[in-house]
Image (cartoon, rainbow, N blue to C red):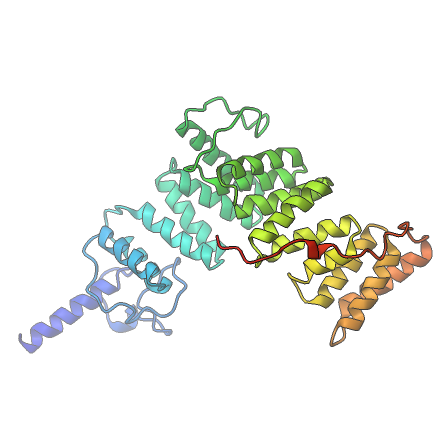
Length: 362
């Protein structure tokens, strides 16, 4: 191979790698100051110059296959690189799949803006794809965009009901006015998302029906269980809240939210030492004491509030400004209003030890 031909091959490869630019230019145009070999709004990983030493893919399918292989090998930057390369082909074949996979990686990285952008483009290409609509609605819910999330999640559920032959559901009247059908192919997270929206609207009974329906399909659904327990707590159904939150904490002992939900339930029941045991599994002990003091103050139990906030201040290895501020407020309220009498229920002896909290594989 002649020297001039080798240079020609190398130049051609450089042009192909710069697939997001128009035509071929000098290396300064291809590589920015950070060494990134292309610029794309959906890429946020490490510099891509030299990220892949392989020849450029010959088709979108090959690029997506490379991305899948990289993702399974725990190389998300390379996966993003390959999925974006799939978008460079004029035909845009399988572009919806590439956008969805790009969005999924960004969602895992908590890059919600980029995930939403990618999911939106996938949904524009295939508006009747259940998974695309579900993912877009869920990411919008995470971003606090309730109105658009509701729109996409309802559209998701409508498509899922149509898939199962149920055309009678009328979400305009009641999310569960008609009996919904759920199966193992249903986008369960979309249903949970609708439940969260119902809870945000203080429609707790509706939300609880949704969560229970999900649990009928997957009785270990982490999201459905923790949200059901919290919904019972919000509605004041403390016995149900304790049972569900305790089950969630037992099944998922490393989940801080499950322990927090259980702790909040115990505080509402004025079982403060049980609350301390639960909250201490989700946060440092001084923060747990502060939270018990703060929430018991909101409940009007100023005697307990002062006690737990004092313990929070004494427990902290350094100045705990939040606890100090809450303690001043609780003492002021205690002076202004008579303390709540607990008829011997305070201090409450902890019953937490009767529950066998063990690691559970799942």
